[in-house]
Length: 401
Image (cartoon, rainbow, N blue to C red; front, side, top):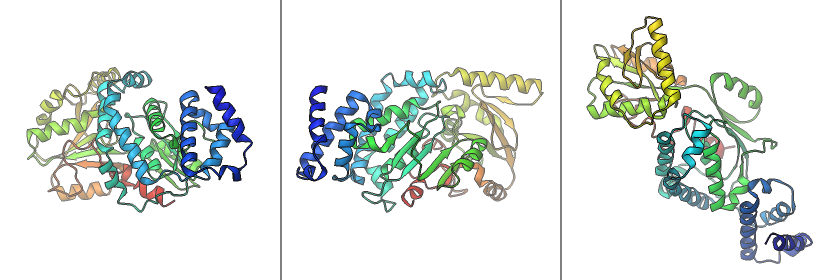
């Protein structure tokens, strides 16, 4: 089979561009599809990155044929999303855990299920209809530097770049490179034209724009390295919840999920509780102890043991809710395994204070009656496609390059 394909390629190598134009569009499209698919299956996407015969041949056809339009891209991602439930039952979980032992089966499945519910044709269309996305835009090279704190934390950037028709150059965190690489291969398998729009290893291409996520320290490096090109550089952020004392048992159970899902590692994980004066933080203990939707995680348990010992040595009072420790503190951000709480007397004063700290807050959980910007209890880890990290519209940034 390989010998036959090489023979065909050798013949086409002697045909100039004008002769290739004699082929009908349908024949050319079909042939390109077969050759790209064959190359990917036999050699992997890396083969398409090299200036070989296959690449030269396909490059000629690429200049003659239309690229994927927005409708094709939406259809491809919707099909990818439909595969996620099956991936949960595969050895994908073990691969993810072997690369990062924070990525337990429960949290990897949580991420896949979340994205599966978002990647539907209707939802993707509703999202992209909010923007004037060209059907076939001039392709830009977007370098995306991902974080690795929770499974698939960089998938939204991956989706935003590709759904808008641009090239994703991914510099993946070593802590979360298994999942996105596998999903990229699945996407290319379903639609081989994505092969030229996804690069996970070759960073020699000069980027037209950069999207980088990291810590406050790494953001300074990103600014120095990529400040000369259009960029989005994300720093550390925390999330908080505002209680008013009227919360139902169900809402407190949902708040436990906002705190404990992904072991509190996400920027959308609630790490601070604002309680009305006189409220007993002990009301939160039972919901936190009862939350059983995460698998045992040794690194998380190590952090809990460390924090218990540290606080005991410092004689710092804390409330032990078994899966998390509650400490009274004014600090927004808390260590792993710890949630801070503080009291407020006047809600309007608190909201004004939080507005001044807007650059440090990812999202606020609470009753919308208190403030329309608050999101419901239990939704911190369930953002929509149009809920953007750091409140920076990623898709708008990309399409306006």
